[in-house]
Image (cartoon, rainbow, N blue to C red; front, side):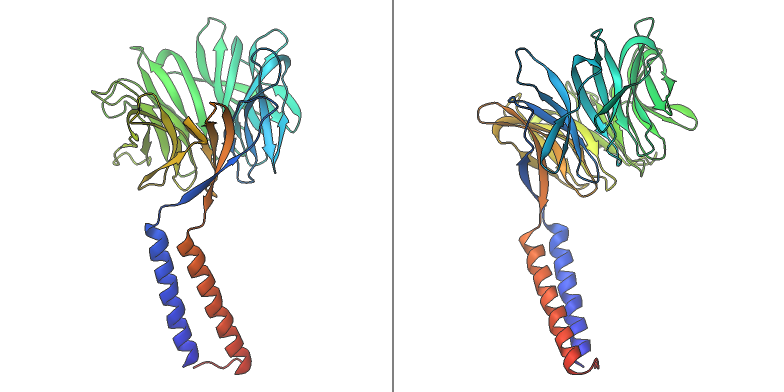
Length: 368
């Protein structure tokens, strides 16, 4: 009898806890990740191990941005290809970082970092390029200049380089690739319009304009095929962040703003959470956001006017930047904080289990 009552009690607690958690908005704590000695840093990407990539200023005369790798509280300068500047834009589960790095010639080349070792990726005949994203197999995507001055979406794998082409126009950029090898970005068509595009087994697919608008870009894709988009909806004058679940029969969801007119999305995880920034009611001011598929949360700042979120891992940890009250830019994490209700029900559930265990010991393992 006691065992039956305890099971009923436990089911009731579990139901109440799940119900409470289902309707409670997640709260986030903001954590400053530090810098490389100057008052400027931005975190661009995070993997499942909590390793972070981004860029930060060096404490020298002039503006010198350097790619960084952050892990367990320590930020390291990833260096360059002989020039002064570099930037890290993506990171995979192995900790391989992609981005661009300046060569001694001054050209910004697509680059990979494995630990402290940096490798220049080949271009499509031009002088520069950028690797925007990388999957767990080590395939990087981005864009590279051709010898004629135009640039095309590019994929790098196994030391080789591949031109992903366009939709009939002169330009294209690949921003992200998932672990199935599906790549997304933007490409110009024969009319010169920029269109969101997906490169898959059947080549390039035009994903169309956003809500009837004339231009769009696909900024990210997860392993479920869900996609985040940029574009100007029909009748609008500024860009809006959007989400599409990949089903041709499903609508594109406009993620809105915080009272302003503009928003951008930069990252999503395999749970379908999207991060970016949205303009607030005060024109020109924007805050980082996370959208959980139902509601959008303002992640706030460090006391300044601006913040932006660029990446989110499957544990829900978000990275980006936030300004403080002195207008200094900090690389930050927004870390989910357990709800008080979750803590309460967890402790209560633990107490019930402990009580049941003691009863089992006293009765020799018998239950009603």
